[in-house]
Length: 377
Image (cartoon, rainbow, N blue to C red):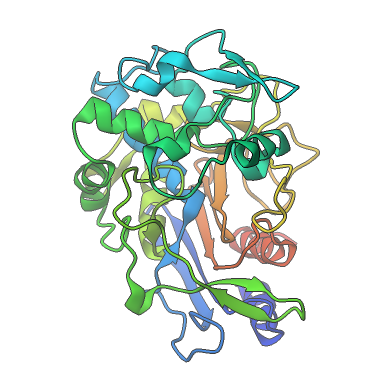
């Protein structure tokens, strides 16, 4: 049934395009397909398998969004209230002007805006203007410090869409509203109830896949990688490590309306609402790269009016590969990808570890996996 995908994956490994990968397809009742091939790191002997741990990067965002919505359901957070009382840095938000200067933001940032990337917060790799400001300002990124997230906005809150660090700030709102560190909230309210035993902010070196880049000759090179140790801020936007099986359990919870194996994580009404586009007529779910070493340009469906919901990109139409309208999807910087199709009750995960994001060959593998999952030509 998955012959096309497995052949394509084997060819990519044989040609040295990736070290290896793990794929999983699940429905509401369980895992229906799982496949691992290749090695965990180029030039090493340890084989990829179901126990391999990956840095899932921005696949963390869906988990953080679910945690925030749990607190909304419990009355600890609101989607549309001013967050300045919980996040003091939001009391003096600045907007980057065309000339590189700063002016005060015209309104407050809300949780809804953080979760949907309409707050104005960007990444340096998604905005050349922000990248230039960061270089001129000497801002250090990826240090794990709270100060390293103090970027200016690219536009007034609610006035645009750009992919950025908003969900890292949502993680800090979760901590302020709950009184717990983000890892503790995740563990007690998501990971333990769902049986996600291999997911967390700490790396497991003995079975973690290496992160790679392609060298000048096209060959794979493993690069030193790890999230900042003893970080002041646990990155709700990109800090988790996980396995395909664990993330499959998270997706199955979404397919089952917020519940899995008797553990309710979110209400059915909230989960149904995740397929509702929150970004209006603005297209969302794409990246125009400003840093080629981190990301390629990324736009899976340029002819589709993709939007963003409260947790993920939403595809409002069926895809050519088979995914239904209202499906949820996104990925992580090192070329990890997932989708969840509530209408069909089907979800898929493909995990690799290669920079930059949006690698065309890995995206072709992801499409092949989806076609085989739905039996499309």
